[in-house]
Structures are given as C-alpha cells and as structure tokens.
Image (cartoon, rainbow, N blue to C red):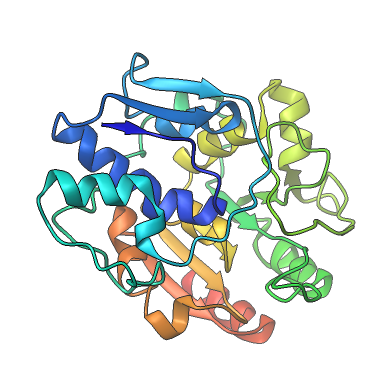
Length: 279
C-alpha cells in the first residue's frame, strides 16, 4: 500500500496517522509512505527504502473524520474491516488491533550529548490563533516564571515553544503570535532555540532527542501534549479548551502512545499545584 503525504494537523499526524502507518508496516502491507522532510525523524521506525521524502508544506487540511485519513482507510481495508464514513477523528480509543503506535523511546538520545547532571524537565508552550480566536491553550508568563523558579534547582529545564522562524518547524493553519521568553529562562534553563544553536540540529530532530532523554513533561492541549505522551514517563497537560476531554482521549489513546502517566489540568493554578505534587 502507498500512503500519500499527510497535510493535516501535526497532532493528528502523531496520534492517528503514524500509529496506523506502523500497523501497516508491522504487517508487511506498506510499500511507501510520503513524509515531509522536517518530519522524517518521526518515521525512524520505517526502513529508509519505504520513506519518500517530500518538501515541507503548510498544514492546512482540517480532517474531522477517520475516513479522511489514508493510513486509516488502508489499515481497515488490509484487515478487511468496515470503517464507518462518519466516524469522528476525536475518539477515546481507536481500533486497538489496528492502532499500533511505534516505540520511539531509545531511538534519539544518542543525537545529543548529556549536558546536565540533573534530570530534564521539558515544558511545552504555544501562543497562537486557535479556532479563529485569540490564544487559549497556553501557559501565561507569570505561571511559566513560577514553574521555572520552583523546579530549576531539582531539574534542568528546557522550554519548547516554536516561533515563526524556527528551523524545521512545519507551520499549520494557526498563526503563531509573539510571546517573549529569554533564551536562558531568566537564568535558570534553556529554550530549544538556544540548544538548536549549540547542537546545530533542526527543531524536530533536537526535540525528539531531548524527549528521549526525559521522563518529566509539562505540555499544553494540541500537538505538544501528544509529543510528550510518546516518551513514557509523566505528562501534565494544560487543557483549557478542545475536544479531547469530551472524547475522553487523555484516558484512552493518549495512554496507548507509550503508557505514559497522564494528568490533565484546566488552568494555571491547577498546573502549579499538580506540578508541585508530581515533580
């Protein structure tokens, strides 16, 4: 089977597209898979002769039904199962026999030398237009500062927040807005942009290497919550709005990605409280 380039949301590429691609590969049913060049590192579970590398393109499609995902359709056809045309992309669990997230832990840590004796704590954030509205699912600066102040002695903190000029970041249909955070996290950590300069690695490559070295994550609703759920450990997710809660996705397929321990909070006060209890 031949899987075309995926141009939907980044988060859905991780949580829907890749697990079904891996199912096809594990069942010797995958002939080729087209992948954007900045996403190639996410597909290291595939042999190089299967991957067709394509230029990066802006993510623009809004895929609301599973029947719009070629990898899902091909998996159902291969397994001779019936896929409902109206089945929503937002689910608690997908077909567990066909849903096979690849094991990513252990594939990338060698790309970055250890740069701290303390364990890593990765904090994800975003500040973008969401659903044609102002930013919603983000950690405000005051909360971010408190997190850094609280944990910098115990952990080496890495802050991951893409910007419009971040090398290797594939933009989607949500405009990124200005959100100023110093590269040294007020003297207590690193931004991914600072580490990109130090290691001369692209955004996704470095992001994967850092996650592979880490088991402690704080993320926000969207793509980052899925990234941080692929690498075992613990993931505290700030969710203010989105379909994942109603669909019960966090207690469903999110845990299937790598059996990470998932905590969901709905505001910054809860985030600070739960983070202190967990970390």
